[in-house]
Amino acid sequence: MSSSMQDDLNGLSEKTTNDSAPESDDFENESLSGQDIPKAIPGEIKDFEEPFEPASFAQWLQVIREKTMEQVREFKKNLKIVEERDPALIKKIKLASVGVVILLLVFAAVIIRNNKAGEVSVETPAGIEDKAKAAQEANDKLRRDNLSNIVRLAAVYHLEQKADLPVSAAYVKLNEDNPVTEYLWDALTKYGASAEILLDPKNPDYYYAYRSADGKTIELSARLENEAGEYCVSGTSPCIYKKMITETEMAVMSENLESYK
Image (tube, rainbow, N blue to C red; front, side):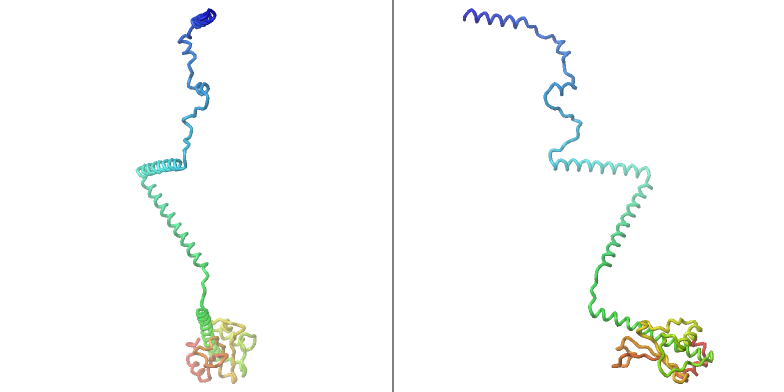
């Protein structure tokens, strides 16, 4: 070894020996607190109090399920406490629940009914024809009843009031203003009947007619809609229904007028 190299080693050894180690007190004074750790160590240290961040969707669902079950258990626990302290309140809650169910059922029933009402029903031609014939029969029955009442009260009025019957060899329409309708109006209102029965159900297309050629017999007529009915002569059109009171029938009526009023 050369003398110069030996001199360098001796100098390094002497320098190392002269450097003193730090005292233990210095280490204690320079110790890091918990708050200084994040500053001393590079990077970020997360706070453990932060919300849990699931690593996957399945894990998130599991967390939600556990929280839900926990809330359900808590609700049942509270409900039991309320039941022990106030049974009447629990009864009210149950009744309210039943009421809500009933309202829901009623609401559903209304919806179903409205849906059914909105359904369009298709009728067959036969069904339409049956309804039309039934309407005709109803109108024809009303016509027969009206003529019976008009002719009866006209005869009573003639016999009791000694009023002359309007004479007309031709048929007079009862839906027009004329002496015949005035006479029949007085007869009907005198005995409490409505003068509206002088009009046909399908007025003015259909109407009633009056005729008395001698002033002793009353004849009323009406056109029926159902020309195939029992009150029409087969093969005739239009079908005319007649109601008549003869002089002989009036003589019988006069013996007991009160029964005809």
